[in-house]
Image (tube, rainbow, N blue to C red):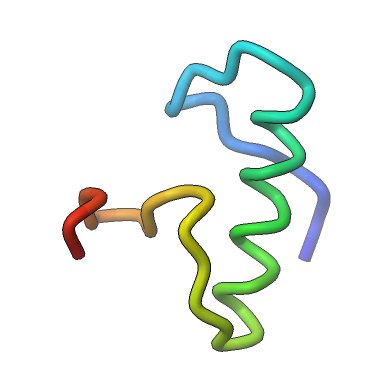
Length: 45
C-alpha cells in the first residue's frame, strides 16, 4: 500500500494525514477504526 494520502477530506494538519493513512492500513487489516470514515460511508456507518 503506497503512502499516498487522499486530500478529498481536506486535511488541515499533518496529524490529519497520518490519521488518514493509519485508518486505511487498519481497514486493509480488517481492524475497526474510528479515525476516518470508510470511502462511501459516513460517520454513522
